[in-house]
Amino acid sequence: GAVVSQHPSWVICKSGTSVKIECRSLDFQATTMFWYRQFPKQSLMLMATSNEGSKATYEQGVEKDKFLINHASLTLSTLTVTSAHPEDSSFYICSARLAGGDQETQYFGPGTRLLVL
Amino acid sequence: QKEVEQDPGPLSVPEGAIVSLNCTYSNSAFQYFMWYRQYSRKGPELLMYTYSSGNKEDGRFTAQVDKSSKYISLFIRDSQPSDSATYLCAMSAGGAQKLVFGQGTRLTINP
Image (cartoon, rainbow over all chains, first blue to last red; front, top):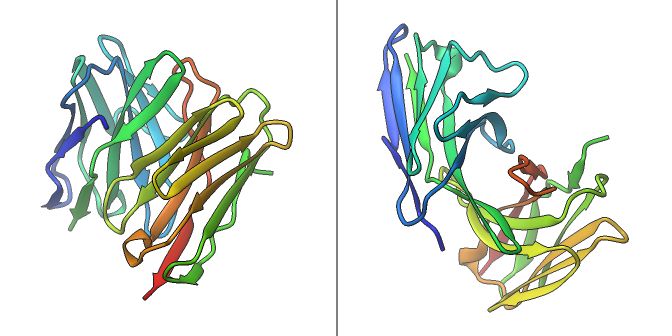
């Protein structure tokens, strides 16, 4: 199957700092990538849809100025959590859309665990 | 009512048993159906995807979609302890529409 990587896999930072998370599709080009957030024992919550070369589309309730998304190439999207606070601590997962023929799927990265102290 | 309903479990079965996981949905526009497996502290891994109705088999896994009943299933044969994970159903209408996930079913296979 298609491979999506994320970096870093985990990060600990002080409150008020910014954290950048990278999402890469390693063996396919993805015009669309997605960013999710997951709390313990809960399902994935979509934060935003990232389209290559255009502005991201944010879900209701997600602050676009706090969660900056850049999708500069067909294989890379980044999520920057600006001025992180303890309530931003979570598991962040990206996915990349693979479509063609009768296939319309998303492949997920391994996730990034963020802890804000 | 949620667009996709999935029993969160937990579900615990003995090794070797056949496992049946199910989701129901309400949006008749959904055409693409997926099952993901997620281990603790890992990203979801795509197990099966199906377009429209029908069955699909891959090794010990079989996915079924019944669009008339708005019901999808995942069967795991000869279950192994390594199958212990959370299983998420997901579906979309296609055309870069976002995936809608079930809540996930936590499955434990006991040796």
